[in-house]
Image 1 (cartoon, rainbow, N blue to C red):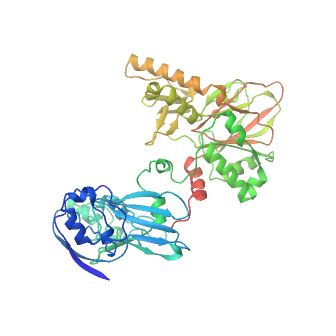
Image 2 (cartoon, rainbow, N blue to C red):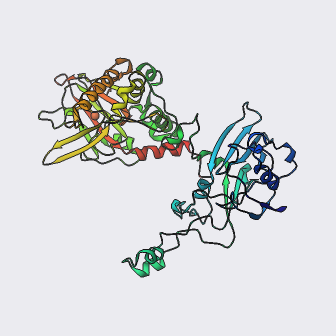
Image 3 (tube, rainbow, N blue to C red):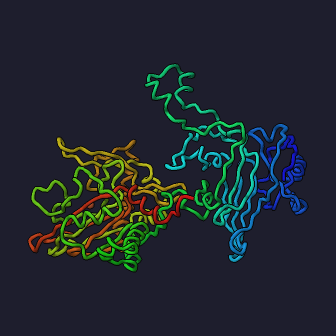
Length: 516
Ligand SMILES: [Fe+2]
Protein backbone atom coordinates (compact mmCIF):
# COMPACT_ATOMS: atom_id res chain seq x y z
CA UNK A 1 0.00 0.00 0.00
CA UNK A 2 1.32 3.43 -0.81
CA UNK A 3 0.20 6.99 -0.47
CA UNK A 4 1.06 10.19 -2.23
CA UNK A 5 1.43 13.33 -0.26
CA UNK A 6 3.27 16.56 -0.02
CA UNK A 7 5.69 18.01 2.50
CA UNK A 8 5.70 21.75 2.47
CA UNK A 9 7.85 24.36 4.15
CA UNK A 10 8.54 22.34 7.24
CA UNK A 11 10.46 24.23 9.86
CA UNK A 12 13.86 22.93 10.91
CA UNK A 13 12.88 23.23 14.55
CA UNK A 14 11.36 19.83 15.06
CA UNK A 15 11.12 18.57 18.62
CA UNK A 16 14.26 16.97 19.91
CA UNK A 17 12.63 13.64 20.33
CA UNK A 18 9.48 12.32 18.69
CA UNK A 19 7.21 10.11 20.73
CA UNK A 20 7.39 6.56 19.51
CA UNK A 21 4.31 5.75 17.49
CA UNK A 22 3.11 2.93 15.36
CA UNK A 23 2.87 5.20 12.35
CA UNK A 24 2.73 8.79 11.20
CA UNK A 25 0.56 10.48 8.62
CA UNK A 26 3.11 12.69 7.02
CA UNK A 27 0.65 15.37 5.81
CA UNK A 28 -0.74 15.76 9.29
CA UNK A 29 2.73 15.84 10.77
CA UNK A 30 3.78 18.56 8.40
CA UNK A 31 0.75 20.67 9.12
CA UNK A 32 1.42 20.36 12.80
CA UNK A 33 5.08 21.05 12.40
CA UNK A 34 4.21 24.37 10.83
CA UNK A 35 2.51 25.19 14.07
CA UNK A 36 4.82 26.17 16.91
CA UNK A 37 2.54 24.35 19.32
CA UNK A 38 3.83 21.11 17.83
CA UNK A 39 7.15 21.55 19.54
CA UNK A 40 5.71 21.37 22.99
CA UNK A 41 2.65 19.21 22.99
CA UNK A 42 2.16 17.14 19.89
CA UNK A 43 0.84 13.68 20.69
CA UNK A 44 0.19 10.93 18.21
CA UNK A 45 -2.62 8.67 19.43
CA UNK A 46 -5.05 10.26 17.02
CA UNK A 47 -2.85 9.02 14.20
CA UNK A 48 -2.52 5.48 15.44
CA UNK A 49 -4.74 4.11 12.70
CA UNK A 50 -2.41 5.38 10.05
CA UNK A 51 0.63 3.34 9.32
CA UNK A 52 2.55 6.01 7.53
CA UNK A 53 6.16 6.97 7.73
CA UNK A 54 7.63 10.35 8.23
CA UNK A 55 9.90 11.13 5.34
CA UNK A 56 12.71 13.42 4.53
CA UNK A 57 13.06 13.70 0.81
CA UNK A 58 16.41 15.41 0.46
CA UNK A 59 18.83 17.77 2.15
CA UNK A 60 16.43 20.59 1.35
CA UNK A 61 13.41 18.73 2.62
CA UNK A 62 12.73 21.17 5.39
CA UNK A 63 12.91 24.26 3.30
CA UNK A 64 11.10 23.50 0.07
CA UNK A 65 8.11 21.67 -1.29
CA UNK A 66 8.52 18.02 -2.05
CA UNK A 67 6.23 15.34 -3.34
CA UNK A 68 7.01 11.68 -2.98
CA UNK A 69 5.53 8.25 -2.66
CA UNK A 70 6.21 6.04 0.33
CA UNK A 71 5.01 2.71 1.56
CA UNK A 72 2.83 2.58 4.63
CA UNK A 73 4.59 0.62 7.30
CA UNK A 74 4.67 0.83 11.04
CA UNK A 75 7.61 2.30 12.88
CA UNK A 76 7.10 -0.18 15.63
CA UNK A 77 7.47 -3.92 15.26
CA UNK A 78 7.07 -6.83 17.65
CA UNK A 79 9.29 -9.85 17.25
CA UNK A 80 10.58 -12.94 19.02
CA UNK A 81 8.94 -16.38 19.36
CA UNK A 82 6.13 -14.92 21.49
CA UNK A 83 6.34 -11.39 20.21
CA UNK A 84 7.87 -10.48 23.52
CA UNK A 85 10.25 -7.88 22.13
CA UNK A 86 9.55 -4.60 20.37
CA UNK A 87 11.66 -2.36 18.19
CA UNK A 88 10.57 1.22 17.74
CA UNK A 89 11.98 3.98 15.61
CA UNK A 90 11.60 7.72 16.14
CA UNK A 91 12.56 10.05 13.34
CA UNK A 92 14.38 13.27 14.13
CA UNK A 93 15.56 16.04 11.81
CA UNK A 94 19.05 14.64 11.25
CA UNK A 95 18.95 11.23 12.89
CA UNK A 96 16.69 8.43 13.96
CA UNK A 97 16.46 6.77 17.35
CA UNK A 98 15.98 3.05 17.77
CA UNK A 99 14.49 1.69 20.95
CA UNK A 100 14.50 -1.99 21.87
CA UNK A 101 12.37 -3.27 24.74
CA UNK A 102 11.25 -6.62 26.06
CA UNK A 103 8.02 -7.37 27.89
CA UNK A 104 9.82 -9.82 30.14
CA UNK A 105 12.26 -7.21 31.44
CA UNK A 106 11.41 -4.07 33.31
CA UNK A 107 12.31 -0.61 32.10
CA UNK A 108 11.81 1.09 28.78
CA UNK A 109 14.83 -0.49 27.12
CA UNK A 110 17.97 0.91 25.55
CA UNK A 111 17.83 3.67 22.96
CA UNK A 112 20.40 4.28 20.25
CA UNK A 113 20.70 7.28 17.96
CA UNK A 114 21.87 7.02 14.37
CA UNK A 115 22.59 10.08 12.22
CA UNK A 116 21.15 9.58 8.74
CA UNK A 117 24.61 10.27 7.31
CA UNK A 118 25.96 7.38 9.39
CA UNK A 119 23.24 5.09 8.03
CA UNK A 120 24.04 6.00 4.45
CA UNK A 121 27.74 5.54 5.12
CA UNK A 122 27.10 2.16 6.76
CA UNK A 123 24.97 0.64 4.02
CA UNK A 124 25.72 -3.09 3.82
CA UNK A 125 24.39 -3.78 0.33
CA UNK A 126 26.63 -5.49 -2.20
CA UNK A 127 27.17 -2.22 -4.08
CA UNK A 128 28.48 -0.55 -0.93
CA UNK A 129 30.35 -3.45 0.73
CA UNK A 130 32.06 -6.18 -1.27
CA UNK A 131 30.12 -9.39 -0.79
CA UNK A 132 33.09 -11.72 -0.24
CA UNK A 133 35.87 -9.62 1.28
CA UNK A 134 33.52 -7.22 3.18
CA UNK A 135 35.59 -4.22 2.17
CA UNK A 136 33.88 -0.90 1.78
CA UNK A 137 33.46 0.21 -1.81
CA UNK A 138 33.16 3.97 -1.42
CA UNK A 139 34.71 6.73 0.63
CA UNK A 140 32.84 8.32 3.53
CA UNK A 141 33.78 11.66 1.96
CA UNK A 142 30.97 11.04 -0.52
CA UNK A 143 28.23 11.00 2.10
CA UNK A 144 26.35 14.33 2.34
CA UNK A 145 26.51 15.29 6.05
CA UNK A 146 22.89 16.48 6.14
CA UNK A 147 21.44 13.67 4.06
CA UNK A 148 17.87 12.62 4.85
CA UNK A 149 16.16 9.46 3.71
CA UNK A 150 13.12 9.34 1.48
CA UNK A 151 11.52 6.66 3.62
CA UNK A 152 12.19 4.48 6.63
CA UNK A 153 10.43 1.26 7.58
CA UNK A 154 10.79 -1.77 9.83
CA UNK A 155 10.38 -5.29 8.46
CA UNK A 156 10.71 -8.85 9.64
CA UNK A 157 13.82 -10.45 8.15
CA UNK A 158 15.22 -13.97 8.16
CA UNK A 159 16.07 -15.75 11.43
CA UNK A 160 13.62 -13.67 13.39
CA UNK A 161 15.58 -10.53 12.69
CA UNK A 162 14.12 -7.07 12.57
CA UNK A 163 15.37 -5.02 9.66
CA UNK A 164 15.46 -1.29 9.22
CA UNK A 165 14.94 -0.41 5.57
CA UNK A 166 16.06 3.04 4.53
CA UNK A 167 15.50 4.47 1.08
CA UNK A 168 17.70 7.27 -0.25
CA UNK A 169 16.98 9.63 -3.09
CA UNK A 170 19.08 8.40 -6.02
CA UNK A 171 22.37 6.95 -4.88
CA UNK A 172 22.43 9.20 -1.82
CA UNK A 173 26.11 10.03 -2.35
CA UNK A 174 28.16 12.89 -3.73
CA UNK A 175 29.90 12.12 -6.98
CA UNK A 176 33.05 10.01 -6.76
CA UNK A 177 36.04 12.36 -6.83
CA UNK A 178 38.64 9.68 -6.33
CA UNK A 179 38.54 7.90 -9.66
CA UNK A 180 41.54 8.56 -11.90
CA UNK A 181 39.28 10.05 -14.56
CA UNK A 182 37.71 12.56 -12.19
CA UNK A 183 41.05 13.59 -10.73
CA UNK A 184 42.49 14.11 -14.19
CA UNK A 185 39.56 16.25 -15.21
CA UNK A 186 40.13 18.45 -12.18
CA UNK A 187 43.91 18.51 -11.89
CA UNK A 188 45.22 17.44 -15.27
CA UNK A 189 46.77 14.15 -16.31
CA UNK A 190 48.35 11.96 -13.67
CA UNK A 191 51.18 9.75 -14.82
CA UNK A 192 49.95 6.22 -14.52
CA UNK A 193 49.54 3.11 -16.54
CA UNK A 194 46.44 3.97 -18.57
CA UNK A 195 45.61 0.35 -19.33
CA UNK A 196 45.63 -0.64 -15.67
CA UNK A 197 43.58 2.41 -14.77
CA UNK A 198 40.91 1.67 -17.31
CA UNK A 199 40.77 -2.03 -16.51
CA UNK A 200 40.49 -1.51 -12.76
CA UNK A 201 37.17 -2.66 -11.38
CA UNK A 202 34.75 0.02 -10.30
CA UNK A 203 35.21 0.75 -6.64
CA UNK A 204 32.02 2.59 -5.94
CA UNK A 205 28.32 1.83 -5.87
CA UNK A 206 26.92 2.01 -9.35
CA UNK A 207 24.65 4.95 -10.00
CA UNK A 208 21.13 3.84 -10.58
CA UNK A 209 18.08 5.62 -11.83
CA UNK A 210 16.24 4.04 -8.91
CA UNK A 211 16.62 5.10 -5.32
CA UNK A 212 19.24 3.35 -3.25
CA UNK A 213 17.91 1.12 -0.47
CA UNK A 214 19.90 0.25 2.66
CA UNK A 215 18.73 -2.71 4.69
CA UNK A 216 20.11 -3.12 8.22
CA UNK A 217 19.70 -5.86 10.77
CA UNK A 218 18.69 -3.82 13.82
CA UNK A 219 20.94 -5.95 16.08
CA UNK A 220 23.88 -5.18 13.81
CA UNK A 221 23.07 -1.48 13.97
CA UNK A 222 22.83 -1.50 17.75
CA UNK A 223 26.15 -3.29 18.11
CA UNK A 224 27.68 -0.69 15.78
CA UNK A 225 26.06 2.32 17.42
CA UNK A 226 28.14 5.38 16.49
CA UNK A 227 27.26 7.61 19.43
CA UNK A 228 28.29 6.97 23.03
CA UNK A 229 25.51 5.79 25.27
CA UNK A 230 25.79 7.37 28.73
CA UNK A 231 26.10 4.00 30.39
CA UNK A 232 28.17 2.46 27.63
CA UNK A 233 31.89 3.09 27.51
CA UNK A 234 32.72 0.34 25.08
CA UNK A 235 31.99 2.72 22.21
CA UNK A 236 35.39 4.32 22.47
CA UNK A 237 37.32 1.26 23.68
CA UNK A 238 38.93 -1.05 21.19
CA UNK A 239 35.81 -2.32 19.54
CA UNK A 240 34.29 -5.42 21.13
CA UNK A 241 37.28 -6.43 23.19
CA UNK A 242 35.19 -7.36 26.19
CA UNK A 243 35.10 -6.15 29.78
CA UNK A 244 37.95 -4.49 31.64
CA UNK A 245 38.24 -4.73 35.41
CA UNK A 246 40.77 -2.58 37.25
CA UNK A 247 42.32 -4.30 40.24
CA UNK A 248 44.54 -4.01 43.29
CA UNK A 249 46.58 -6.85 44.78
CA UNK A 250 43.81 -8.23 46.96
CA UNK A 251 41.31 -8.20 44.16
CA UNK A 252 43.58 -9.94 41.68
CA UNK A 253 44.53 -12.62 44.21
CA UNK A 254 40.85 -13.67 44.24
CA UNK A 255 40.87 -14.48 40.53
CA UNK A 256 44.46 -15.68 40.39
CA UNK A 257 44.89 -19.14 38.88
CA UNK A 258 47.46 -20.97 36.79
CA UNK A 259 45.89 -22.67 33.81
CA UNK A 260 47.48 -25.92 32.74
CA UNK A 261 49.56 -25.61 29.55
CA UNK A 262 48.02 -28.60 27.79
CA UNK A 263 44.51 -27.46 28.69
CA UNK A 264 45.31 -24.04 27.24
CA UNK A 265 46.88 -25.45 24.09
CA UNK A 266 44.41 -28.25 23.43
CA UNK A 267 40.98 -27.20 24.69
CA UNK A 268 38.72 -24.32 23.69
CA UNK A 269 37.66 -23.73 27.29
CA UNK A 270 41.25 -23.61 28.54
CA UNK A 271 42.27 -21.19 25.81
CA UNK A 272 39.27 -18.94 26.37
CA UNK A 273 39.83 -18.84 30.13
CA UNK A 274 43.31 -17.41 29.63
CA UNK A 275 42.14 -15.09 26.84
CA UNK A 276 39.29 -13.69 28.95
CA UNK A 277 41.43 -13.19 32.06
CA UNK A 278 44.19 -11.54 30.08
CA UNK A 279 41.68 -9.30 28.28
CA UNK A 280 39.83 -8.28 31.42
CA UNK A 281 42.64 -7.99 34.00
CA UNK A 282 45.66 -7.69 31.73
CA UNK A 283 47.36 -10.50 33.63
CA UNK A 284 47.19 -14.32 33.33
CA UNK A 285 49.32 -17.30 34.38
CA UNK A 286 50.03 -20.79 33.07
CA UNK A 287 51.74 -23.83 34.57
CA UNK A 288 53.22 -27.19 33.56
CA UNK A 289 54.93 -25.82 30.49
CA UNK A 290 57.43 -28.31 29.07
CA UNK A 291 60.97 -27.14 29.72
CA UNK A 292 61.90 -26.37 26.14
CA UNK A 293 62.01 -22.95 24.50
CA UNK A 294 59.78 -23.95 21.57
CA UNK A 295 56.84 -24.81 23.88
CA UNK A 296 56.87 -21.33 25.36
CA UNK A 297 56.99 -19.81 21.88
CA UNK A 298 54.02 -21.97 20.90
CA UNK A 299 52.18 -20.71 23.96
CA UNK A 300 52.21 -17.04 22.97
CA UNK A 301 51.77 -17.94 19.29
CA UNK A 302 48.31 -19.27 20.16
CA UNK A 303 47.13 -15.64 20.11
CA UNK A 304 48.93 -14.61 16.92
CA UNK A 305 52.35 -14.25 15.33
CA UNK A 306 55.15 -13.36 17.75
CA UNK A 307 56.17 -9.72 17.40
CA UNK A 308 59.82 -9.61 16.36
CA UNK A 309 61.83 -6.73 17.77
CA UNK A 310 65.52 -5.91 17.81
CA UNK A 311 65.69 -8.32 20.75
CA UNK A 312 64.76 -11.08 18.32
CA UNK A 313 61.73 -13.37 18.03
CA UNK A 314 62.07 -14.35 21.67
CA UNK A 315 64.78 -13.39 24.15
CA UNK A 316 66.48 -14.95 27.14
CA UNK A 317 66.49 -13.22 30.51
CA UNK A 318 69.61 -14.53 32.25
CA UNK A 319 71.77 -12.51 34.56
CA UNK A 320 75.18 -11.84 33.08
CA UNK A 321 78.18 -9.62 33.53
CA UNK A 322 78.52 -6.53 31.31
CA UNK A 323 74.78 -6.70 30.64
CA UNK A 324 73.39 -4.30 28.04
CA UNK A 325 70.04 -4.19 29.86
CA UNK A 326 69.27 -3.93 33.56
CA UNK A 327 66.86 -6.86 33.16
CA UNK A 328 69.87 -9.10 32.56
CA UNK A 329 71.37 -8.40 36.00
CA UNK A 330 70.42 -9.78 39.41
CA UNK A 331 69.58 -6.28 40.63
CA UNK A 332 66.19 -5.12 41.77
CA UNK A 333 64.23 -4.07 38.69
CA UNK A 334 61.65 -1.35 39.40
CA UNK A 335 58.12 -1.24 38.03
CA UNK A 336 58.04 -0.46 34.33
CA UNK A 337 56.61 -1.36 30.97
CA UNK A 338 58.77 -2.58 28.11
CA UNK A 339 59.73 -0.73 24.95
CA UNK A 340 58.26 2.67 25.77
CA UNK A 341 60.79 3.95 23.23
CA UNK A 342 58.62 2.43 20.48
CA UNK A 343 55.81 4.51 19.00
CA UNK A 344 53.55 1.46 19.48
CA UNK A 345 55.05 -0.82 22.12
CA UNK A 346 54.12 -4.50 22.16
CA UNK A 347 50.67 -5.07 23.62
CA UNK A 348 51.26 -8.41 25.32
CA UNK A 349 54.42 -9.72 26.95
CA UNK A 350 55.15 -13.29 27.98
CA UNK A 351 57.75 -14.30 30.52
CA UNK A 352 58.13 -18.05 30.72
CA UNK A 353 60.25 -19.58 33.45
CA UNK A 354 62.57 -22.27 32.09
CA UNK A 355 64.58 -22.43 35.30
CA UNK A 356 64.47 -20.66 38.64
CA UNK A 357 66.39 -22.06 41.55
CA UNK A 358 67.70 -18.78 42.93
CA UNK A 359 66.73 -17.11 46.18
CA UNK A 360 64.60 -14.02 45.63
CA UNK A 361 63.59 -12.68 42.25
CA UNK A 362 59.84 -12.53 42.97
CA UNK A 363 57.74 -10.81 40.30
CA UNK A 364 55.45 -7.88 41.12
CA UNK A 365 52.62 -6.63 38.94
CA UNK A 366 50.60 -3.42 39.23
CA UNK A 367 47.54 -2.30 37.28
CA UNK A 368 48.71 1.13 36.11
CA UNK A 369 45.18 2.03 34.96
CA UNK A 370 43.96 1.55 38.53
CA UNK A 371 46.83 3.75 39.73
CA UNK A 372 45.94 6.44 37.17
CA UNK A 373 42.30 6.39 38.32
CA UNK A 374 43.37 6.89 41.93
CA UNK A 375 45.69 9.69 40.79
CA UNK A 376 42.83 11.44 38.99
CA UNK A 377 40.62 11.24 42.06
CA UNK A 378 43.22 12.36 44.60
CA UNK A 379 45.33 14.78 42.54
CA UNK A 380 43.18 16.08 39.66
CA UNK A 381 45.39 19.11 38.89
CA UNK A 382 48.58 17.09 38.89
CA UNK A 383 46.92 14.43 36.74
CA UNK A 384 46.17 17.13 34.20
CA UNK A 385 49.90 17.90 34.00
CA UNK A 386 50.73 14.24 33.37
CA UNK A 387 48.28 14.22 30.46
CA UNK A 388 50.03 17.17 28.82
CA UNK A 389 53.78 16.76 29.21
CA UNK A 390 55.61 14.52 26.76
CA UNK A 391 58.09 12.19 28.41
CA UNK A 392 60.93 11.02 26.16
CA UNK A 393 62.13 7.40 26.27
CA UNK A 394 65.17 5.96 24.57
CA UNK A 395 67.30 2.88 24.12
CA UNK A 396 70.61 4.44 23.32
CA UNK A 397 73.29 1.95 22.34
CA UNK A 398 74.92 3.92 19.61
CA UNK A 399 76.16 2.88 17.04
CA UNK A 400 74.02 -0.27 17.12
CA UNK A 401 70.62 0.87 18.35
CA UNK A 402 69.12 4.27 19.05
CA UNK A 403 65.39 4.07 19.72
CA UNK A 404 63.56 7.21 20.82
CA UNK A 405 59.94 8.20 21.34
CA UNK A 406 57.88 10.53 23.49
CA UNK A 407 54.62 9.76 25.28
CA UNK A 408 52.28 11.36 27.80
CA UNK A 409 52.40 9.60 31.18
CA UNK A 410 48.58 9.23 31.37
CA UNK A 411 45.93 9.54 28.66
CA UNK A 412 42.15 9.44 28.99
CA UNK A 413 39.59 8.65 26.34
CA UNK A 414 36.44 10.58 25.48
CA UNK A 415 34.58 8.94 28.36
CA UNK A 416 37.27 10.09 30.77
CA UNK A 417 38.50 6.55 31.23
CA UNK A 418 42.22 5.76 31.34
CA UNK A 419 43.29 4.71 27.86
CA UNK A 420 47.11 4.72 28.11
CA UNK A 421 49.87 4.87 30.68
CA UNK A 422 53.56 5.11 29.84
CA UNK A 423 55.87 4.52 32.77
CA UNK A 424 59.43 3.23 32.55
CA UNK A 425 61.83 5.54 34.43
CA UNK A 426 64.87 3.40 33.61
CA UNK A 427 64.36 4.05 29.91
CA UNK A 428 63.62 7.74 30.24
CA UNK A 429 65.66 10.11 28.06
CA UNK A 430 66.55 13.66 29.22
CA UNK A 431 63.27 15.47 29.84
CA UNK A 432 62.25 18.50 27.82
CA UNK A 433 59.97 21.33 28.97
CA UNK A 434 58.66 24.65 27.76
CA UNK A 435 59.54 26.44 31.02
CA UNK A 436 61.09 25.95 34.45
CA UNK A 437 57.59 26.08 35.94
CA UNK A 438 56.49 23.22 33.74
CA UNK A 439 59.58 21.24 34.73
CA UNK A 440 58.86 21.65 38.41
CA UNK A 441 55.13 21.03 38.22
CA UNK A 442 55.71 17.89 36.13
CA UNK A 443 58.23 16.49 38.60
CA UNK A 444 55.85 17.17 41.47
CA UNK A 445 52.97 15.43 39.65
CA UNK A 446 55.17 12.53 38.56
CA UNK A 447 56.34 12.01 42.12
CA UNK A 448 52.74 11.84 43.36
CA UNK A 449 51.88 9.30 40.66
CA UNK A 450 54.87 7.20 41.66
CA UNK A 451 53.74 7.22 45.28
CA UNK A 452 50.48 5.65 44.15
CA UNK A 453 52.13 3.08 41.86
CA UNK A 454 54.39 1.96 44.69
CA UNK A 455 51.64 1.67 47.27
CA UNK A 456 51.96 -2.03 47.97
CA UNK A 457 48.19 -2.43 48.18
CA UNK A 458 48.32 -2.33 44.40
CA UNK A 459 50.98 -5.07 44.24
CA UNK A 460 50.25 -8.56 43.08
CA UNK A 461 53.39 -10.53 43.94
CA UNK A 462 54.29 -14.07 43.03
CA UNK A 463 57.39 -16.10 42.34
CA UNK A 464 57.45 -17.77 38.96
CA UNK A 465 58.64 -21.35 39.33
CA UNK A 466 60.00 -23.72 36.71
CA UNK A 467 57.38 -24.44 34.06
CA UNK A 468 55.18 -21.43 34.82
CA UNK A 469 54.61 -18.37 32.65
CA UNK A 470 53.00 -15.00 33.01
CA UNK A 471 51.26 -13.13 30.21
CA UNK A 472 50.51 -9.47 30.78
CA UNK A 473 49.24 -6.41 28.99
CA UNK A 474 52.52 -4.57 28.56
CA UNK A 475 51.01 -1.10 28.22
CA UNK A 476 48.69 -1.51 31.19
CA UNK A 477 50.24 -3.83 33.77
CA UNK A 478 53.58 -2.68 35.16
CA UNK A 479 56.06 -5.38 36.07
CA UNK A 480 58.96 -5.53 38.46
CA UNK A 481 61.37 -8.06 39.87
CA UNK A 482 62.92 -8.23 43.28
CA UNK A 483 66.69 -8.71 43.39
CA UNK A 484 67.93 -12.27 43.62
CA UNK A 485 71.07 -14.09 44.69
CA UNK A 486 72.66 -15.25 41.46
CA UNK A 487 75.11 -17.45 43.41
CA UNK A 488 72.23 -19.46 44.90
CA UNK A 489 71.11 -21.11 41.66
CA UNK A 490 70.14 -20.51 38.07
CA UNK A 491 67.47 -18.23 36.71
CA UNK A 492 66.42 -18.39 33.08
CA UNK A 493 63.28 -16.81 31.61
CA UNK A 494 62.20 -16.69 28.02
CA UNK A 495 60.46 -13.53 26.88
CA UNK A 496 58.37 -12.79 23.81
CA UNK A 497 55.98 -10.09 22.63
CA UNK A 498 52.71 -9.93 20.78
CA UNK A 499 51.27 -6.92 18.95
CA UNK A 500 48.14 -5.58 20.63
CA UNK A 501 46.20 -5.79 17.39
CA UNK A 502 46.77 -9.53 17.16
CA UNK A 503 45.65 -9.99 20.73
CA UNK A 504 42.58 -7.77 20.37
CA UNK A 505 41.74 -9.71 17.23
CA UNK A 506 41.35 -12.83 19.39
CA UNK A 507 39.18 -10.96 21.90
CA UNK A 508 36.89 -9.71 19.13
CA UNK A 509 36.58 -13.21 17.74
CA UNK A 510 35.51 -14.27 21.21
CA UNK A 511 33.12 -11.45 22.06
CA UNK A 512 31.84 -10.30 18.69
CA UNK A 513 29.05 -12.35 17.16
CA UNK A 514 29.43 -13.21 13.48
CA UNK A 515 29.09 -10.47 10.90
CA UNK A 516 25.34 -10.10 10.48
FE1 LIG B 1 60.56 -5.65 31.41
